[in-house]
Every structure is written in structure tokens, then in C-alpha cells.
Image (cartoon, rainbow, N blue to C red; front, side):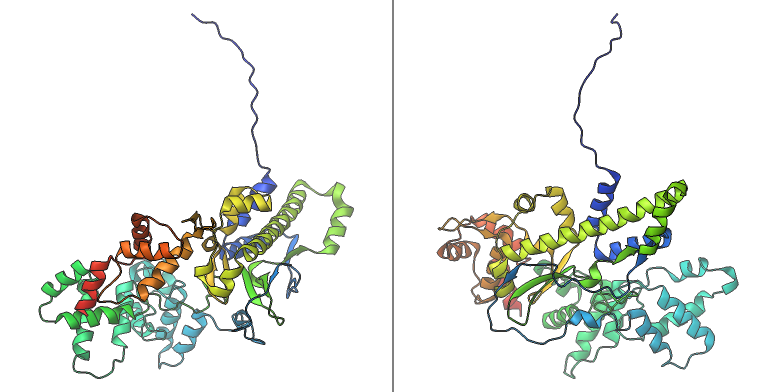
Length: 459
């Protein structure tokens, strides 16, 4: 029988302080999530206050790149300046209630339904759940609520108030005005039947042929026109409208723009970083009362400083990251995705002297707006593949963009095979295996050559 023994063992472990843990948590949040978190801070901590109309830091970034002089629009107003003044989706819908001759009870039910729509304009909850989860004294009747929903579904944008995607698309079809042709009524009838009975069963050539057999009353051209018509409908009725906070679903954190002298500059979007502070007079009072403050007051005081530090760390990190992206992806902002250079998180972490996990958090759910569009920060990071003859290399995103442009220019009756695409890329110094080209093509959701040819012949 062994006797119990005591052994000493030394271990080195790394533990993050609570202050650093909160800073990393704040860093990885999206702009919308950060707004919700800050609202909670303001409600819970009496030492924090929001700065109204804080002046934008015009010297946040110092990296400049000279873009081509063609295509630069001077003196244009910033489109984001108009967002705060635009009525949100819910206000636009409430305004339309007054356009209908409704009694007070029905109007109040329509207002109630509007308040229960999600940000895309859908009614997530069933009418039964809505009736069962309101106070009893409201005495809601499901039949009356259904009648109010029918009225709401007549509002603009068309499709609002639907309970699912199928209902939204059907509402849009009911309000669609097609040019009067011989087959316009049959195309609409076919589109309604496809959505109601065969939803999503037309995405491949095989499924399309099955539909033609299941719907013998419609010709293949009618079914194809109906599928095309469905593709023009909006799956998110209220997409692009501001939400309750007067902001879009995606709010860019950084902006790359051309200034009056024609130089590329990068800056933070003023609404992406909440401006909080501790009132100076309060800080003076705390210093005077420091010895007499109770434990709860001291805890809130420390929390306030931790919150401010977390916000500052987030802003500083994204500023440095924006500078680095502008420096490394100069050609992208002038020429688009074909000029996107390889860039890795590891390389970025080494240059900025930060952990790779910190960079990963910093680019999570963050967006950059520029003349090319709005892009997630992760878009600018991709591995280097297919080294060219000069040994430089290309990013996966640039190669996919090049493949897309080549296939767009092909003869539909003689589409390019993967082997031909490999040879064309090799002529430009990009050496890829055929299976790699096939993988990139599939990632772009482009069918192989024989299927593209069949689809064209069916047209």
C-alpha cells in the first residue's frame, strides 16, 4: 500500500485582468451590440454620461494614399449624414395608418402589430401568441387582430407584415404590375403556385425539369419566366430602411474616402463609437469624498473608468487596423476586388504588435465603407495563393473575382471548361490546379460548363 505524499510543482499561467477581459469583450461586439451595451452602462452607472454632439476627431488617421484623379466626385455630401434625420421603418408605417379610414379600435390594433414587427418587417409571433401575452384588460380578439393584420399588409413597402418569406413574396406578387403581354397572367399564376406548393424547388437544372413534369399545364418558358419573376422580389421587405434608432442594419465602423486634394483617407464613422465621459465636477467631488465613499459607490466609480478604457481601446485598435488596411490594400480602393492583395491576420498581428486573437476580435462584425461599396473587414484578409512568376502571389478573393469576370465574358453556347480557365490563368502568371479552380468556381455558385450550356439552351 502506497503512502500519501506531497509534491511541489511550478506552473506558469496567464490570466487576464477583469479590465482587459471587458476590453476584449467590447472589442469583438458589433456596432449595434455596442450601442445596446452602452445603453445598459448609462442606465446602471450614475457616474457615466453621454456626450451630446461630440466633435468628430478629424486627425484620427494619418495614412494617405493618392488615388487616380478620374471618377472622384468633389463636394458631395456624406450620405450617412442623412440617416439620423430620416424617419425609421416604424414611423413610416405609423404614418400610413392615417391614410386609411379606420375606427379607433382597428387603428390601435394596427399600431400594436407595427410595434411587434422585427427589423426586416416580418411578424415573428403568431396572432395567438400575441393575444395570449398581452394584459387581460386589453381584451384582444384574434379575429379582430387578423383583420388588422390584413390592413397592415396593404402598407408600403409591399410585403411588410408577413409571417414568413412565402407570405411576403405572395403579397408582393398580389401588388405587382406586369406589362400586359399574352402570358403575363399565366406567369403570375405559375409564380403563385411555385411559391405556395413548390417553394425553393427550382434552384437546379434537375429540379427545374421535375417542375416541368409536375406542372404540365405550364410550358417550360412560362415556368422559367415565373422563376425569374420570383427572383426579382424582395425577401426582406424593409431592407434599407432605418430601424428604431435611425440606423441601418449594417453600420460601417470605418470609411475610406477621397478628400478635396484627391488623397485617400481613412476615418472612423462618428456614430460607431459612443461618446461617454465622467463629468469633471463629479470627478472633483469623488476625489474629495474618496475616504468616505461606501463600497458600492467605489465599485461604480471603478466600473465607470473601466468602461471608458474599454471604449478607448476599441477605438484605438480599429484606428490602427484601418490605417494598416489602407496601407496594404491601396490598389483595391482604386481598382476594386481584382487588385485585392494577400493579407493575413498573423502578419497584421505582428506588425501591430497585438495578439492574433485580438485582431480576430477586432475584425469580427466590423465594416468599412468606400467608393467600392460596404465590406466586412474580414473581406480584406485572405491567404496568398498561386504565386506568380515574380514570386508575389495573389489573394483568393482576387482570383475568384478574376474567374467571375472571365466566365461573365464567355460565349454562352461554348462556356469555358475548368481546364480552359486554368490555362487562361496560367497565361497571366497564376498557376492553379484544375481542382482548385473548380473549388473556387463552386464557391462562387457557378455551375460547371456543361450545366451552363444546358441552362442557356433552355432559355
